[in-house]
Length: 102
Image 1 (cartoon, one colour):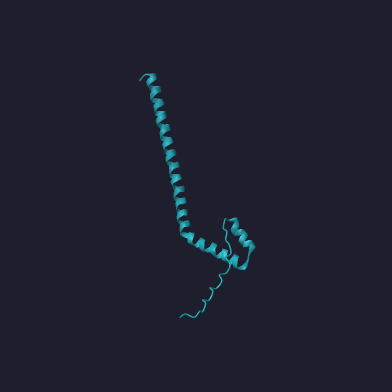
Image 2 (image 1 turned 45 degrees about the horizontal axis):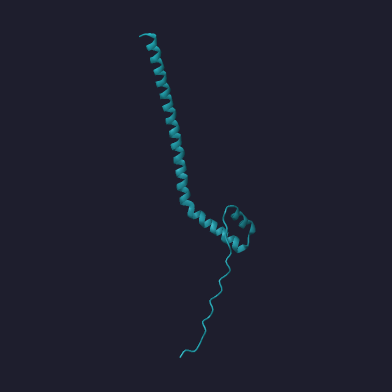
């Protein structure tokens, strides 16, 4: 084997070693990303399961604030993008007129 062939084979071996190291590094990075994605999916699934509970909690807080006139609680809800309005109590329906029918 002449010196040129030796250098060429050494360079190809070094390139193969670098490619193997890069492949191992990328595989570890990919595994790390998959773990992160799995954790995020789990968080989203748990959030969806708790959404109904959170909605009920917010509604209860808004009703409490409206009923008691609690301005600090209303301000807290508004800081988090939750706004509500207080509806006037419904007036009872008018009694039907007792007209004589023939």
